[in-house]
Length: 288
Length: 249
Ligand SMILES: Nc1ncnc2c1ncn2[C@@H]1O[C@H](COP(=O)(O)OP(=O)(O)OP(=O)(O)O)[C@@H](O)[C@H]1O
Ligand SMILES: [Mg+2]
Image (cartoon, rainbow over all chains, first blue to last red; front, side):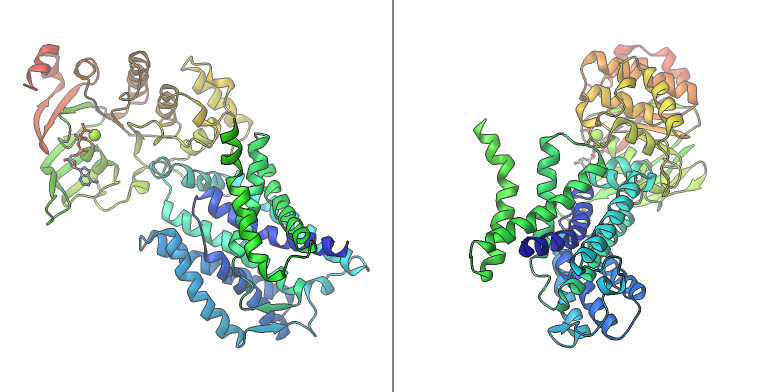
């Protein structure tokens, strides 16, 4: 049972990545690979700051800032230097590997004797419950914040940028600037997830981000499939479904591993699982 | 209101496929004029409109809107003056967003899109009132996505959207090309009404010579990147519809 609780908590932590991917992928239609690097960056900054005794709030601010900066660099390369978005993301992700490694100074930094967010903020004496509570509050806050933002005039302009660029330009929006801001927000969220996971797992690792974009993408796809199924247009529920998608994703992975499958095959299983979700609409379509 | 001074536009300069889409063109369009632009395919009509709108920049020459030099101002900066209706109904609206959201954004064309929720009851009522003037029954479907509407409905809404915020110039590039004859007439009738009601300066590109004859008060004929005819409103009153056909022989 503890196994599934761990998966559930990890799913909550990673749902913040899924929200970030929701912005880049669903709102802007940009496949953003920066994610792999900015997730690790968030974790690396968190590990370094906490082990140097920085306060939690400052640590978080720096982590988010790092992610947002990485995202805006990708946005800049894509819009101003007119480089394909996928390539721009790969470039920044690759560069971030070196940045992360030199920041960290080694490939793995454990957070053994530091007070993390789950210890600093204690509401419930039971550790697992307290962790669950904190993650739930953070995800809920981000869910509400993001949904509200997408309802504002600024958020509407953001959504139109990904949907009809010719229209929104004629309506006075600098779409380049909009995309840069969008990717900054997206990667700021991704770094937030790195901030949480580093503390949840108790370490930052240089390789922890490899393939994480797929996990986020898979969660978004699960959310979208359900949203499509029930014909849901509310942005609130759509983002909520993405969060649920992330939890479902981790639980399914945990289940697969509990069947005794080699942990080395985890990434392969992840990829196959996402492939399955992505192709599901096409497969069922053919039957009809 | 709109002025081009010695404007040229060359695509693929210096390459084998170099095109002089607009050649050393100077023209002045006064406030309140409704100019109809005609000319064969590839004669530079869209290039002219795009230069005014700012989604392409001139290779040479200057462009002025209300006396202000906007030659280097990007398209989003010119939305202060200009509202556009495109040939493709998909280009002027966001399919995945609701009618209401499209109107909300259109109502902020000349303003900053701030971090506030502006789609309130009062705004919904305003949009309802505007949309009901089309008599298409769309006023009760404001939450529907734009993508669920027909091309004609979308063009009609795009036209209305252009007057949701203060506009001075309306650019229409073959707005009825994708529509059936009845929808096309409705669009042009609506355009006529809005242009008069709001005192807009308008430029309409069309291949339909009957429309060119019935609408607007000035005709420009383009050919191979040049304006070869400029018919003022007093001259326009004297010509017959058949004269227009003769210009293309
Ligand atoms: N982006 C571009 N790149 C290269 N050539 C272009 C571009 N846009 C237009 N042209 C060329 O410029 C010339 C004028 O094109 P334009 O679109 O202005 O014609 P038009 O009068 O609008 O024609 P139509 O009636 O077919 O819409 C054409 O030869 C066209 O091929
Ligand atoms: Mg054209």
